[in-house]
Image (cartoon, helix red, strand yellow):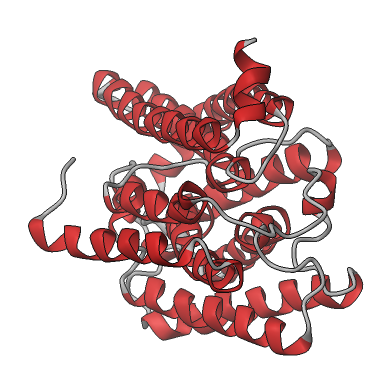
Length: 343
């Protein structure tokens, strides 16, 4: 887990840019948005489009881009029209962030750069905690997300063990057979539904610095930038963090990818829509993949559960490091939040 010399150039340039623009709110706002939109989606791509990319490696990257990009435009357009110019589906208001920041501190502008660096190191990070906490004012909002994210991890881990304990032998039986034609459209539908649901919940992470009611011109800039950023992400086949998905057992099989996306979509729907519990989707996804890996290795003849435990430990460790960095940034920015936690 280290940077190559040429990979340090972009973070250094972006850090210098953050230092130059943070005193100028109008400029800083757009810089944070541009950096956050790519870094957040690139890091969270393992949750939403990672299995889609892995199981469609034989397809042209621009077919995948147009499909997912189209779903993105439809989803955010619906929010913009029905929530009076708000593209976050009202989630920012629910978090007490009713207004866009009027002034910026350096670490607030730097937060998406930190996220980008951790993405390059293949570290899954809770973008909700990192980006939203940089602008939060109450410690309770962070502690509630942390405790309920742990709950989400446990629920996802348990559900995955149950589902794949039941289905692993069935998948193993048909592993070397050609999937039925029905699996491809099912996988595209499940991945598209998951991607749309994620946008509804986590678009707030990149919109936190924007006006709560975007004009048409602002909306056009926002959607165009993210749409073409998605194109770059698909061209890079998920970038480096995609390795977290590719190292999991049999995930490039369209049948396995469909089941992963479907189960995760159900969990996300329950935890983020039916339930009002605020939660980090990253921790839910890591729990899902971890439980799946344990179940597969326990059910397989000759399964290496020690290897599975090592893989789970690595994913959890990286996520925990990202969490610590998020908290350091949030507490460094906000004196009031620091006092609430330690006094």
